[in-house]
Image 1 (cartoon, rainbow, N blue to C red):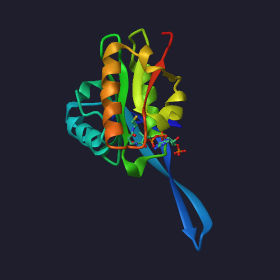
Image 2: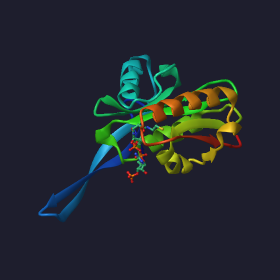
Image 3: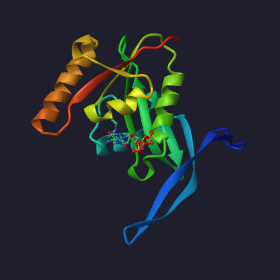
Image 4: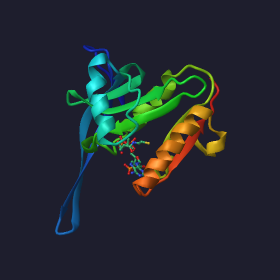
Length: 183
Ligand SMILES: CC(C)(COP(=O)(O)OP(=O)(O)OC[C@H]1O[C@@H](n2cnc3c(N)ncnc32)[C@H](O)[C@@H]1OP(=O)(O)O)[C@@H](O)C(=O)NCCC(=O)NCCS
C-alpha cells in the first residue's frame, strides 16, 4: 500500500513486521505491526551510515558516493541502502544492505526497484553478487552471465573478489548478472 505524506512530500510504504510468538514449540500467533518506511534519494548526511553498513556487511567499500545511493528511512534513521555505480559502459547495481532488524519486509526490493526506475541511461546494468543471491536478483529481470561476457572492468573486480572469497574459504562464489532492458 502506498500513501503520501503531506508534510514532508515523501512517499511512504506500509510494510509489516513479522512477529512470531512461540511457546512450548507451538505457534500461537502471527502479528503484523505496521511500519512506515520512506524510500528516497540519499543526501550528504547519509554518507556515514552508508559507509558503516557496507563495512559491516563486508561488501566492496570502494567508491561509495552518497550521490549514487537510494536509502530507506524508518524510525528516524537509515535502515536500507543501495546504489548504481555509474561506470561508463558498465553501470553496476550494488551495496544493497538492510539492517538486520528490518529484513524480510521488502525494503531491499523497494530500493532496487527505485534505483532501476531512476536509471535512465540506455544499455544493460550489471551486478556482482554472492551465488546464493542470484534467485533474489532474478525477480528484477537480472540473468546470470558467464564472466567472459562481462565488460572488462567488471571482470577484473570479480577475479579479485573471487580470489579473496577463495582465500578466506567464504563458502560462496561470486556470480555476475546482467539486466537487459528497453527504455
Ligand atoms: C540481502 C538483503 C539486502 C535483503 O534485504 P531485505 O530488505 O530483507 O530484502 P527483501 O525483504 O526485499 O527480500 C528478502 C528476501 O531476500 C532473500 N535473501 C535475503 N538474504 C538471503 C540469503 N542470505 N540467501 C538467500 N536469499 C536471501 C530471501 O529471498 C528473502 O525472502 P524471505 O524474507 O521470504 O526469506 C539483506 O539480507 C542484507 O542486507 N544482507 C547482507 C548484505 C548482502 O548480502 N547484500 C547483498 C549483496 S549482493
